[in-house]
Amino acid sequence: MSDARTTAVQGDCPAPDAEEARRIAQAINDAAGRQPVFRQNRRDLPEGQNTAWRIAPEPFCMTAGLVRALQDLGPVLLAFLKGANRLYGESVHGRAPGWIADWLDLGKPRHLVAYSRMNRFKHDLPAVIRPDLIVTEEGRLACCELDSVPGGIGFVDSMSRIYGPLGYEIVGGSDGMVTGFARMIRAQTTTADPFLTIVISQEASDYWEEMACLAERLNEIGLACAVVRPEALGFTEEGLHLEGRRIDVVYRFFELFDLANIPKAEIIQYLVKKQKVAVTPPFKPQLEEKGLFALLHHPHLQAWWSKELGEERLQQLRTLLPRTWLLDPAPMPPQAVVPDLFVGGRPAGHFRDLTAATKRERTFVVKPSGFSPLAWGSRGLAFGHDLPQAEWESVLEKALGQWHEGTAYLLQAFHKPGRVEVRYYDTPTDTIRSMRGRARICPFYFVAGDEVTLGGVLVTVCPADKLALHGMVDAVMVPARMPG
Image (cartoon, rainbow, N blue to C red; front, side, top):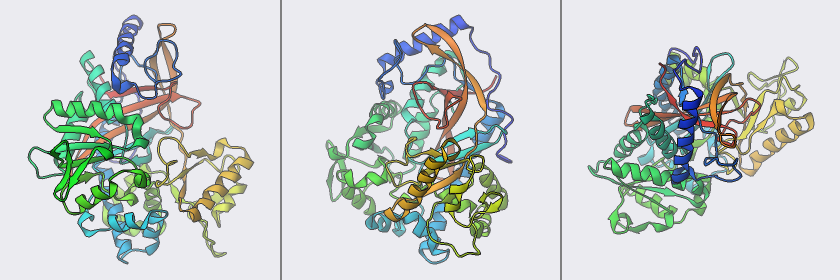
C-alpha cells in the first residue's frame, strides 16, 4: 500500500437481472428466517423481512485497487498496535513521556492496570483486528477506529457461505473467516489439539447466536470449541475446565469496562498469569483506546514513531488515521496552542475555544475513547457540524468534564464517505430496489505470529443522510466480492 488512496470503492461486476436478483434475494431471506445466526436484533421489521438489515441479491463488488489496499493494510495496522504497545511500555518505564501512560490509564481500575503491565504479557497484542473504514469523497481510505473485540465474525462467515455457492468470489474466500480464526487460535498455544472456549458476557448477549454458529463451524473443521457464559467455567489450580475437559484457549468476548460484572474473571486472570490457559484478546485496556490515534498524530512523538515504524509507514498511517485529539481539560499557558486546531483562522489556545467555532469549522466527531459502555457500537457519538450551537457547546463541555470522572473523550476529524449504489430486496413489495448510500467497510484480520490474514470484509451501506454508519434496518449488509 504505497499510500491510502484508492481509485474508487465500487467495481464493475456482472449482476443478475431484476427477476433473477429477486429470486436470489427471496431465497436468502427465507434461509435467514431459519438460521439462528440472523435472529439477533430482529424486531420492528418490515412485513416479510427476516433480517434486521436489507438483503442484497449480490455481494458488494469492490475495485481491484481497494481489494489490494485492504490486503496490504493488515500488516500496517499490526505494526501500529505493536508500536502503541511499545510506546506505552516505554512511558511506564520512564523512557517516553509519562503523560502517555497517564492518558491511556485514565479511569481504569488499578488492579487491571497493574495486571496489564506484567512483564509476561509485554508482547501480547489483540489477534483479531477489525478497522472501521470509509473511502472519502476525495478517494482516500480513512480508518475511523480499530476494534479488537469485534462482533461480526460468525455473521460474515455465515453470509460468505450463503453468497459463495452462488458463484461469487468472496474477498478472503467463502471459508476465510473460520479458517483465519482457527489459525489465529492455534497460534495462541503450543497444544497440538487445543480446546477453545468463547466466553461471552451478559452485556454481549446479542452476539451469542453468531458466536455459537462460529463454534459449530470451528468444530466442523477440527478445532474443538464451545461457547459459554463465564459462570459455566470450572477451575482447579491446574487450569480452567468445561464439563471435565481442560480448556487451552479462551477467546474473550467481553469488554474490559465490564470486567467487574464478569463471574470468575479474577480466576481466568490468575490462571492466565500462571500460564495454565491462554487468552485473547489480552487483558490490556490501553490497546483498546481510540486515543491511540491521538498519539500517532502528536507532534512531540513524530520522531519516536518514525524510528519505530519507518517514515514511509508512518506517513501511511498519518493519512489513514484521522487527526485526533484527547479532550484534556487541563489549563494551558497563554503562549500554548492545540496543534493543528484552528478557530476563526487562529490557532486554538484550548479545546474550549471550539465553542465559538462555526459549523464549517467543527467538522468533528466527539466520542468516548474506550473504557466506557458508550464506546462501542454507535453510542456516545456526536457530530459537531450536525448540531445547533447550544448543543455543540453542551457536548464539548460534557466531554471535557468527563475527564475528571475517569472517562476520556476524543475529538476526531470527520471525513465524509463517498457515495455508492447497491440493490436490495424490498420484502413488502417483493421487488428489487436501488439505494444510493455511504459505505462502512470492515475487513477482519487474523494474526498468527507475524502473519496477518484477511479473512473477509463486511460492507454496510447506509442511506446517504446517515452520519453514523452501522447495522440498521435501512442498511444493506453484505460481504465483499472480488471484481470481474
